[in-house]
Length: 155
Image 1 (tube, rainbow, N blue to C red):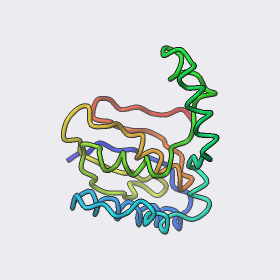
Image 2 (image 1 turned 90 degrees about the vertical axis):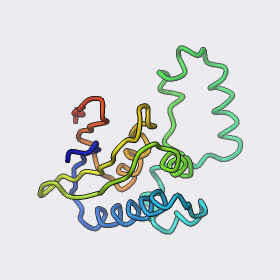
Image 3 (image 1 turned 45 degrees about the horizontal axis):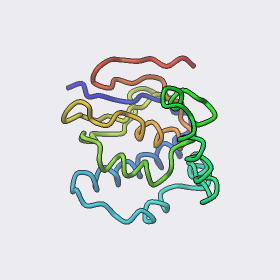
Image 4 (image 1 turned 60 degrees about the vertical axis):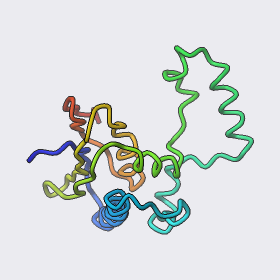
């Protein structure tokens, strides 16, 4: 069976194994619908991986939302100055609330891997959290099959 997936380039087996470890823990919690405390996820990420996420101070967050709501609605989602990386804890919230089953994180060739999932419905929450997880371990997303279409990303 062909599952939906996010495909990425693997150039570091140690980081891939670390990604698989956290993927398996997320999958376990999602399958059991029993989620650990937010802070418990930190042990699965080294400093380098954590640096990919947005860790705003209270002042930075307040300023971001001030600017967000001051921007006309039609511009909010396209204004690059309003883009932020994923918030670490929001990623886990998205995994928890995504309407899909996580299947596997596996190598599909010598230098490519896929994080596979099966949506329960559409819309199911999208691949944003999956991509954020993969990118936090320094892997480059090559393509995705989100259940609607196959998209190859330009490198």
